[in-house]
Image 1 (tube, rainbow, N blue to C red):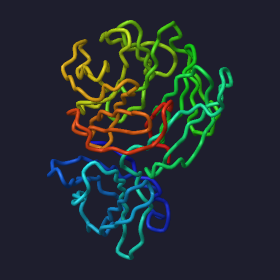
Image 2 (spheres, helix red, strand yellow):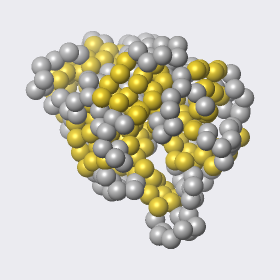
Image 3 (tube, rainbow, N blue to C red):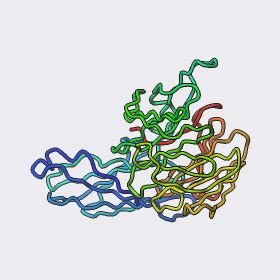
Length: 338
């Protein structure tokens, strides 16, 4: 269950009582393979006479093609969705006169992005994040940020529900919280040869992302974004492993993962041992990712291969969602940008 705060509540409907907050909770339910349903639940608006609520959904954030008046209830299940397809949901409240609030925060599939070198030639160092806001596999925004040798990252670093662009460079984290190509925050953390930077939430459900450095079998977590280690986990691997961190089992805290030649070893209780092993991918050049694609509160496995994205939402190694975005040499990243 993912809490999402309501926004845009000022206006005629709420003029006397002031802004209110609505929390939207989403949970994907078990359904036949050919179709899917999404169960929505939200806390009632209090202190203002409410006649009912409307559920809005579509394939892109802010572009809702279907609206359902669900009446004065706080749960609704949307049915007949295509399994594996992206959907975005929002809720509005209305009064007896038909006046309607603004949309709640959008809840849906994450946005995809690429980190791409724009100018050929060694040492030129001109790179851009190419953001796809609406899952049409077309670049919606280009943000120049980073240089040769940087490690590109995404993270929920600041409140507001949108991802920050991050580049890691020799122990320095440059953070662009408004995605305009200018670093407005910075942290010194790590910097030893072989350090692997990551972002993930180890603070619990609803928390922001933490900064992580993987070093020789140890995961050092900076939850205060101040360069100070306040958590250490032990989960090693071998040279060449790709390190990943995301909440795979849905307990609200990131799990540790090592991806090795088509096999993902996952430590879901952060105890130092893999208790979940999944075979997925394995082609030379495959780039693994972990992120919650279908909003069920659990990170899904993804393989990026030369511009194609293969997603296993059941975490069983079978790709049930596939799409094209990117080209060979691009670095795939995932977040929420709009």
